Amino acid sequence: MKITQKPLKNRKIHIPEIGEVLLEKSGRAKHMNLSIRPLHGVRVAIPAHVSFAAAEAFARSKTDWLMKHLPRTKALEKEIARRRRDMPADWIDPAAARKILVERLDKLSQKCGLSYNRVFVRNQKTRWGSCSARKNINLNVNLVLLPEVLMDYAILHELAHTRELNHGPKFWSLLERFIADARELDHALSQFSFLLAR
Image (cartoon, rainbow, N blue to C red; front, top):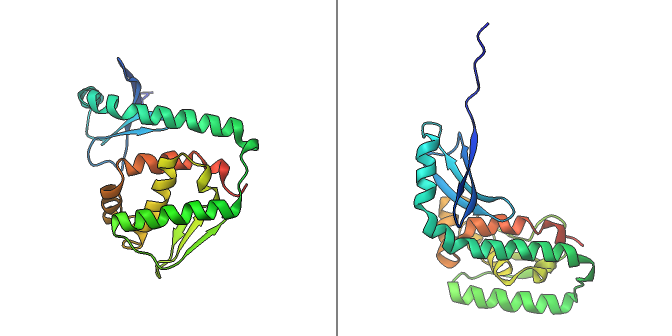
């Protein structure tokens, strides 16, 4: 009986000064895509027809880009670890939190030219924020516990929804005009879900 081996779906390589990089086959990938995700590291998504050798060459060609962006990811990982360790000591004054969030929302709204209707600050159980078709924005009171870059990202995410209500390419293109590496920040924000609805 002939035994056929399943093709490898992923492979790990090591790049000096970067560390471990995951090369992973993806049925959804149309092109090679490099990303850095806090707590998950560096990953190259590879279309089925692209070889691991080509993906490794691609990853190594991006060393300078990785060296530029890795420090922020490492800083976020340290912040995630610190917040998890110190969480019992984190308490919120709801009135003070609302003031901080509304002031920041107004500043970013004016800076980006994205207007909204009304804002509500609540202790939501499952999400950091939302935006309605009427441009009413809900913000989670726990946003004030996040690193500032992630608080700003969450607010800008909802402001972008005042123009693009879905998460399609136009939404991400708009968001990335106002904050770099939006998709990486979106993933970083998900690592703080333990702060929701405390």
